[in-house]
Amino acid sequence: MQALFISDLHLSADRPEANERFFGFIEGKARSAEALYVLGDLFESWIGDDDIVERFNAVIAGFFAALAASGAPLYLMHGNRDFLDRRALLPRRPAASCLPTRPWSTSTARRRC
Image (tube, rainbow, N blue to C red):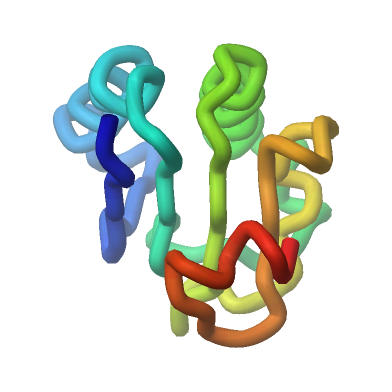
């Protein structure tokens, strides 16, 4: 098993092909990973947790919830386009997800979350 890292996907409803590749990745390789690290700029923009009511953002949150339910740990880090708090995006299972407040290494991530 291996840890997987993604960054700078800049997902938006206006990029359906990129979204479909992301969904396939989450439903496939990410489920068998030791952990998934999202290193920022997952969205083209994220204006805060109130943005979760937008259908597209709720769909992404649903994919992350399904990933967490499969047992794959999920670690999210802010980027410059989505730096506002994203707790609404995290699955409700705290052991399966983490939103660190500062950069971390993979060797210390689990201890800090």
